[in-house]
Length: 338
Ligand SMILES: NC(=O)c1ccc[n+]([C@@H]2O[C@H](COP(=O)([O-])OP(=O)(O)OC[C@H]3O[C@@H](n4cnc5c(N)ncnc54)[C@H](OP(=O)(O)O)[C@@H]3O)[C@@H](O)[C@H]2O)c1
Image: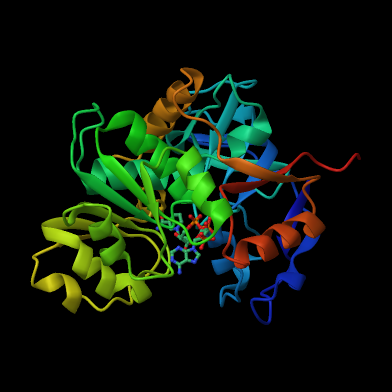
């Protein structure tokens, strides 16, 4: 089967080492599904995973952590899906990724693709939607029943995670959602995804919130460049507020200590990585995302598509992601004609 990845450990994290591969098609067992991949999307984790690895057994190595496709075959213990089902999922960071014609994935972290979306639109959603859902409803323990009031600040609201977190918060809570963006186009995109207000993360944020008339905010979802925003977060969050961080653990916590802020980390690969007993929650939450899309309450965050899936387009996707100015998600769709 065709795939994109590394034949051997790359000498550095350079994108140019990504290459077209010809690999054996894997066979499913246990609760695994074998999925024929139709489209994938790029996330910053792809570029973060690009470096050398000591273990030669992990090569050839395929990256890619978002896919939509069709179930080709299922392991003997799989009960949730059948061959022919159209699905979407993010997968697991310690297994071969989605930049391959066929991929094995545990059915407990897979859901049916929304009928309303084609494969390209659907591939944009899983990784970021899981991250946003687990933050809002598991880490912050907000009830997804449209009752929670207060304020949520999403730092980096126009990116992949921010654009779906904003939609989820608007649809399933009564929170006032304030996003951050630094450019006219990212500001406009954040507003289109549902932010009530947008402030600029390239300037001190606490005074901008005060100028808008907000008291210190209840929930801060810090998506990117968090170490540089910690002093500002300490100034703008309320005493006993909640902060969730997804991009860094190298944080100066002094600015939030006096306010007894609860600090949460969210890592959307935790469940598959540690095979937690509640792993099937990712199937459930992704199924709910699918239902909300089909009900017209959520929309795809895809803004850009490259085609077909090849070393050339995956390298280009990595380069675009590394510029750090993405609006929503970049999808790579289809395979070159055989
Ligand atoms: N832990 C997890 O499970 C998990 C899951 C998903 C992602 N992540 C991590 O979370 C981070 C965000 O992911 P993503 O997919 O949303 O990234 P992304 O799509 O690449 O984010 C792009 C956005 O970042 C904004 N940005 C750039 N500089 C900023 C700054 N100094 N302060 C605030 N925002 C800034 C940009 O807004 P402007 O152009 O307006 O400046 C742009 O819209 C990445 O580090 C990723 O690896 C972690």
